[in-house]
Image 1 (spheres, rainbow, N blue to C red):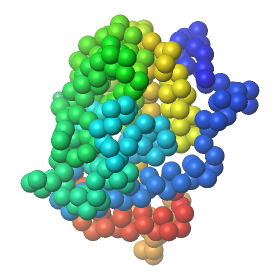
Image 2 (image 1 turned 30 degrees about the horizontal axis):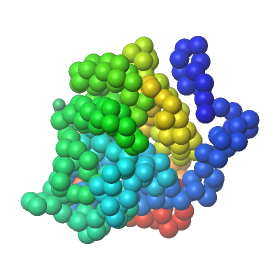
Image 3 (image 1 turned 30 degrees about the vertical axis):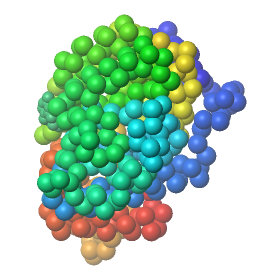
Image 4 (image 1 turned 90 degrees about the horizontal axis):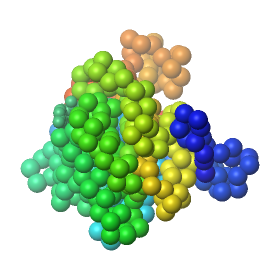
Length: 332
Ligand SMILES: Cc1ncc(C[n+]2csc(CCOP(=O)(O)OP(=O)(O)O)c2C)c(N)n1
Ligand SMILES: [Mg+2]
């Protein structure tokens, strides 16, 4: 699918010259269906969070398109009817606070009934962070940042040593790069162990819990460092764009059998993506950002306030209503 530039950066083949690459590119209908699916699942996520009136909306919304590409775009080999299928690909959400987004995806894929989403953060219900055994499809207990990627490394190492055909996908946050295990131990070990079956995707939404990540992490230094340790680095232009996401993810999957380098996919995203409502000066919902009156509208996009907290209940209901209207009108 690709070659490496002099800088070691992944170069995607010109689709017009490669039949194989052409097959990986999703068609407009598929992209549209996935965008619609992601909006539906963001609505499910917001409704899930609205009930306990807490939980991680910004993280769940930024990661959603990547999850939908993996689970609905035919990338992961998995079977909701048989969550422990031996040869399944493993997906580990290292940024475990993004659990609500993953629950929406898993419920939609049929891992458990959608009604269970209404139990988030209740005793005996879905856990606020991913917890092994709490719901089918959750592969590891995560939430302490850095933990999931260490588990992912162990699983990938096991698979390689014992000749298992499955791959391990792991999503980290950009703030999570501050954990030593992410930027140190796993970063060094994975290429040394030749883990070509490990794919780490960074949800680079630019935010952590109460501020911008750039205050602590030099975003561009991370891929540079990983490349120098021996990772294959792929920088996406837009972590919400299905054409690019699927072309890359499908290509990475096809190359697994002869790859010895772990893969790091850097995906720029928008924290809280799609979490807004727009109203005109007259108070009517509008889809046009240009026509929206800021005094009547509200957005959690790229807003560090809404890490673990939600806006007030009225705003949340307005956001849900606006998202539903976008769904009805095909605006996504
Ligand atoms: C070891 C550890 N330290 C601190 C926290 C508290 N914490 C939870 S989420 C978060 C910010 C994470 O930011 P990022 O990785 O960028 O994820 P995002 O929410 O932006 O997707 C922090 C500091 C934690 N969960 N684990
Ligand atoms: Mg972040």
